[in-house]
Length: 511
Ligand code: AHR
Image 1 (cartoon, helix red, strand yellow):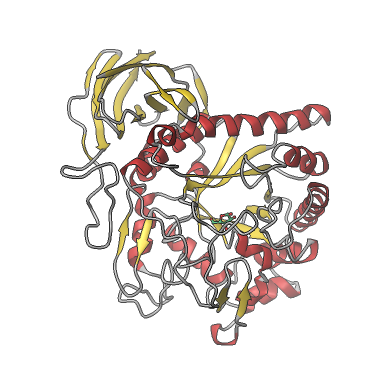
Image 2 (cartoon, rainbow, N blue to C red):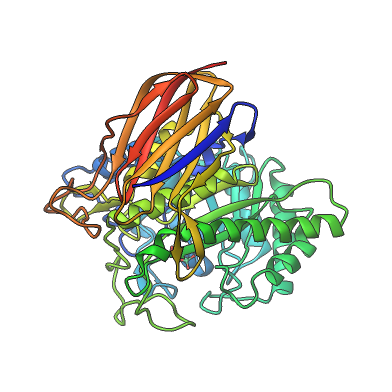
């Protein structure tokens, strides 16, 4: 049995939990849109062709803001192709995923779907093959009330009221050689600056995200952010981060400590952004939009220049990267969410990639069922219960040795305090593969009351750390009650099973 002591204090807060931390991502890729959220003819489809079963799971997941339409896809996309009567829309080749795009689903469909899902739209513009004009025209089409050619075209296409999209991505991964319209940092920095300026001329209320590095292993990481922001600091509100992780060669210990790397990545980007702020004598802060993150088994993909394996034939919505997630992956996802929350003073937006089928918490089959993957659970519970103020956590945990990240805490945690509801929520992971962990929580400035939630995701009976939910066994990995949580005044104790993720919510009163 390992041990850990966690201390939280009422006045030691990091900042407010922004709801946009629980974002997701819908790309025209594989089966995320087609046969994912949209499948006319499916028994669960509504009159728009939206799958009701997937919509219900999206709501249960608690996703708040959804990035659309890509991803790599957006860098070759003409947003106008998705307008007007579906039967008149142009079929196009999508070079990013080597796919035939029917354009049956476009901006109006996504906005309508988002309304039903209760999610905010985060729209990406194409700065790969297109530029300032297409970007500002899209803002005018979407957000201008009426009386101009583009805003009246939107109305003629059935949307009388403006879409009022507040959050815009200035392209996608343009530092990557695989990207259509790949650019140098200077080329992109100037383009982002001019696009942001022109888009804000149309609607000054929007917020824009500049493209940061595609991952921290990029040769230009750091220099890219510095150069881009040296051009565009005044015009942009956020810089993006992307990261995908996986277990390599059976090294579960390192994989479970992935969030150590995420912490470091986030802190490195903050340092770079703030260095530009200091050098340019800027007053405002540019915050971080971690708008693609997840576990993704990329091993075996084609090459560095084309890191995503695509079919050699041109198909419509082929199966692409439909990773099946296990218990270990779910625990890692829980710790990645912890890392995001612990940096919630600067990471203001985060989007798990993606929502359905493509490296996703939700899976669906064409003409078949939809179900929750293991990684659904930590996301859903944190989106539900992480409310109010993010609390600093002082952790004294037994540690373990990892090949990739040196020593790491066995127990990882984040915590929030919802003053309105009088609740403290703790999100905990035990990275120990064999040992349970005895955890003591000291609540300074609070008196603990009732335990309002105590649930754990662990290796299921008769299973192992590779157990996962599949079409035939959709509920093998999920949450079960965590017994034995005890609260005595300002001290709580609990035991985390080996290899587990848990949520504990307590009623508290200020002491
Ligand atoms: O989410 C899958 C892909 O990963 C996205 O299209 C791209 O931005 C990233 O490389």
